[in-house]
Amino acid sequence: MIHIYTDGSARGNPGPGGYGVILKYKHYVKELAQGYRKTTNNRMELLGVIIGLEALKEALQEVMIYSDSKYVLDPIAKGWLKKWIKMDFKDKKNPDLWKRFWIVYQKHHVYFHWVKGHSGQRENERCDQLAVASSYQNLLVDEYYEKMTVSVGNVGVI
Image (tube, rainbow, N blue to C red; front, side, top):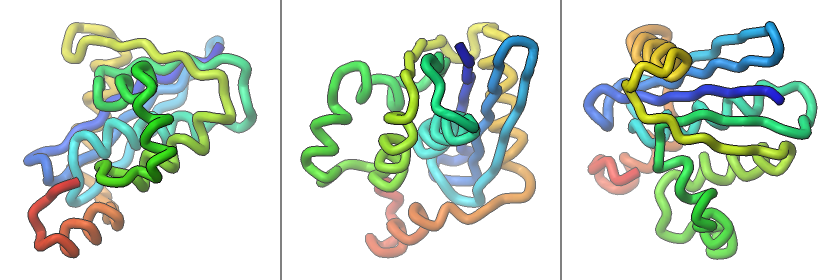
């Protein structure tokens, strides 16, 4: 089983943000992080999970994802995501990322484990450090977020 730890962060929400991901398989460990100049915490939490799954080179039987984000975990655990898909994400926030998640999620047998944030869990703390640090350097444009905020009068509804 591969273990993926993720976290997302935004300073200002919306504001500069980033994600941090740790992939662990046997004795291999890989860290991934990226920052964006204007985004939200929820977008970065979800993007961290997506990036972790997209980093897998082949479909695996079992993947365990550890996240402190109820925003990410609840829609899957409570069956909301399947309803959102049937409604084509009408009136849902972050449809671009949820659609991207759904595509990569179906390639694997994924389990989720909720981790209480900032509780001393080593990998979650490291992902938080990666996410926060990435929000200060080499920032990309979260094009979907910026396009949506401009189209609705820059009120940050995503």
